[in-house]
Length: 305
Image (tube, one colour):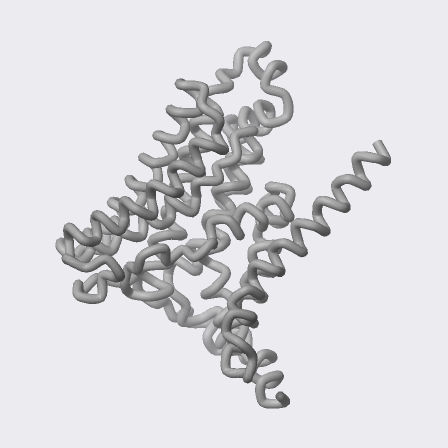
């Protein structure tokens, strides 16, 4: 047990937390920005899955990271636009439309994978590319901190940049002001000339962009292949992280970091003589407990008003 505790308190554990946090932070930022606009995108699970599949297949057949990146982003933004069309133009319930999209993504990616490889499980038969690791020249010399921060995949640093971009968009641009106005009171926003549907569509497109980056990292950074249903609920955990962070940049980051720690603990506890099913359920139990606590606190705040 002491050896296990030492490994958890080591720099390697901190390194693993950042790796595990990244595919949660990207979609959490996407959920947060759509949530601020009042149209929560819960289709990030499906968007991540489709973007991961598109990125791996394009990288395998073209041997170009840039084309793979473009394909993954185009897939994520396209699916977000499709969700926006159903919700904003056809007036479909966004929750039902998003659930349908998540279900469609599971079957569609298996079908596309079978067409490309003849297999239904994974793309291991293809030689797909991965995003490079980045060694930070000065940071790597800092004891402990350098071991945690340096040598990560480039998209790990991209996740930190995504939080900054989210803050910049929401609080420093006219679009961010419109997003917050529409989310707080769409009728009042429309009365001063803001196009509510257009603003919400922009928020959904941004959520698709960030969700796609999470999917690309999952299949081309965290691992180097695509597998069926490889998102494994990360899109849903991202919704919890955004909710716990109150859809704010810093709160969303800290909540994603918390879930990254919990998921990493589950990985490190795997060698113990504990049923694997119990270990695998730890992240989801933590998500349920965190949301329960958040709901209780929110109810108390409402009673005080």
